[in-house]
Amino acid sequence: MDSILDLIPQLMNSGATSQLSQQIGADEQTTQQGLAAAVPVLLAALSRNASNPGGAEELYGALARDHDGSLLDNPATALGSGAAMQDGFGILQHVLGGQQGQVAQTLSRQTGLDPATAGQLLAAAAPLVLAWLGRSQRQQGLDPGGLQGYLGGQYQQAEAATPGLMGVAEQFLDSNRDGSMVDDITRLAGQFFGRR
Image 1 (cartoon, one colour):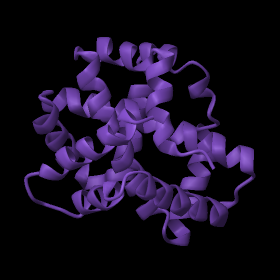
Image 2: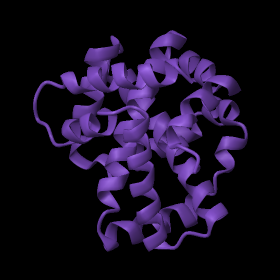
Image 3: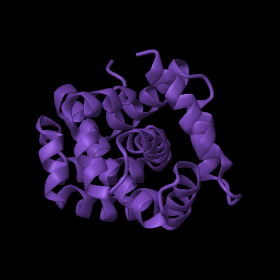
Image 4: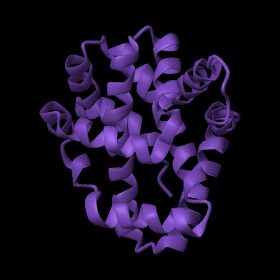
């Protein structure tokens, strides 16, 4: 099973992170650091949301309607158009709900991006994550129950790749504190990507 954490190196190699850094006005290293934190947080949130049948059905429907994976055929172009980011803001509302602002604020503190720019980065990451899931869902013919199990497997695989990474992401999503956990996520994700 491919790991969703492989998405970051794929985006780096495709030039998408370079394109995104230009679009949000940040340097490429900071953009990569932000994405390395955003992907596990989004995976943890999706896994949590899909842990009940209703949530799994809702995610399955969203993937079937809007996320066939084609965004990943040329992510740099998709990010350059700005349309993916606009879609991402709506996705974040569904995935993170009332925690969207908190996640952006914490990402801002840990990366040095201003909160609005951190929010843009999260919005760009969201459709890429769903494109990856949508492609996997189609390739494997997953129904809602299968998708629920697949997300659980991705969570476990990510946790095994970098012990503590997903637990920190979960704790952050459940936390109302000042957000030092995104720093932990970034550090742990950086260790993983550094040895790829």
